[in-house]
Length: 323
Ligand code: DPM
Image (cartoon, rainbow, N blue to C red; front, side):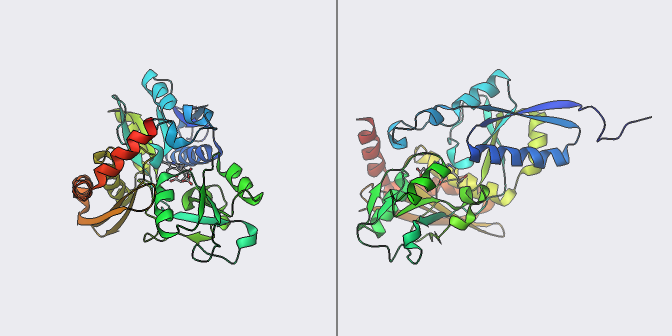
């Protein structure tokens, strides 16, 4: 007699690497549960590890450099064969991956926008009505530069820590408002803290924001076949265009570069911005074309922004962050 799938011993084990933060674990368990439904015979194991970015909490992110800050330990583990794939927020995954690894899957994107989260005393306020000098917390150079441009009368202050820590600092009164990704709040069941969703005219989001990127060994056909079931093609087109744009500008994850994409049928529109840190200069443009040309569109838009003066801004930021 043959046994049923539910009682049979697992035919194989797949090991998933994850950071230990609450958001990382929620994302990893979501991926595991979705895969488990489709592959009931596979035993999925989650292996957690700390990355360099999790350990250095006191230094501003933009100062410690970014190449693989939240990914390197996971990548080493995949290359050693200790784990088979790793789940990341796509926006934390560098656009150039180490030799031997690849972006194996991009999942359906949630709302990629940034959100304003306010202290209780500002419940009746929006960005346009927050008072002169309001203390706004962010350590994203992208958010800082764009908001400074539109709201030069705010006082911007660095903020570090995981989402709960940041919300606590806000609620304690250390800030009047903070800026966070809508997607992160929603995944942690705190979507009710989104007070105002920032429109693209105010803040273009980070490359890959709202999507999960699953990294695996290049050409690992067995694992790729498993991951394929979670792939969301429209999100792939949008995010490949965004990532090509960022890669071409040679920006790491901590640069004042923002994007927005829209897909209508197979027609893709990509908007991009490079902003100076003081918010004085915003270099913006838009390109459209076939979704199947996503990466080429991203590269072209980057080249356009460069001819408009984006490179000078990026060079200056690189020079100051090294000094
Ligand atoms: C990256 C940035 C931030 C994270 C820079 C940026 C925000 C840093 C900060 C690349 N990664 O967006 O310009 O505000 O201090 C991060 C978040 C999420 C993934 C949290 C957030 C959740 C959203 C998602 C941190 N990484 O952006 O508020 O999965 O897309």
